[in-house]
Length: 168
Ligand SMILES: [Zn+2]
Image 1: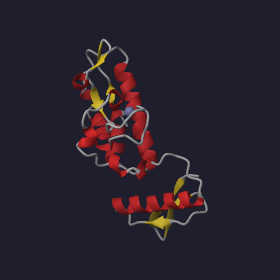
Image 2: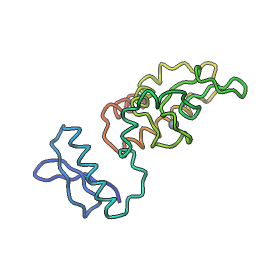
Image 3: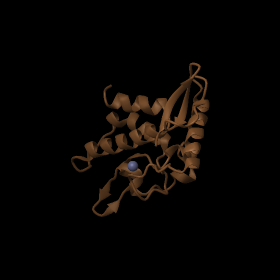
Image 4: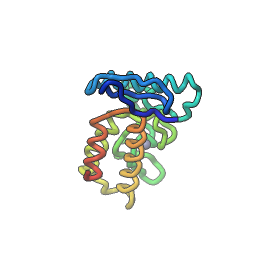
């Protein structure tokens, strides 16, 4: 069951599945929209059929601390630079996870501000020195994260960066 959009008296809202209560917010109120969506998800959790890993429930990815950005491991980068077998953090590019990341495909550890930056500056990134195909893989990887984050929450800046990269 997904979170669906709904409307009451012209006000937009979110509800859990077809039967859920519609939680409305004032159009344009981003934090109100977030709260309404969160309430719909909480209702889904209460009903007991929330299966997805809800990205929006992990607020730390929205405002990562300096400590979470320290000593990033290889999976935190979209373009990982290796000198032989050795991971070189300083030459790796497009960081977009906090440092607890183990699985590069996990969405719960995505550093959302850095994901936005990575998408926005993707076309200015110099991939020379990386194996061929790195650019295409990095781009597909970042797009997958962005799609996943946007399925879980509203983020106009992230959506705009993704659309610009896709030439939409
Ligand atoms: Zn990743």
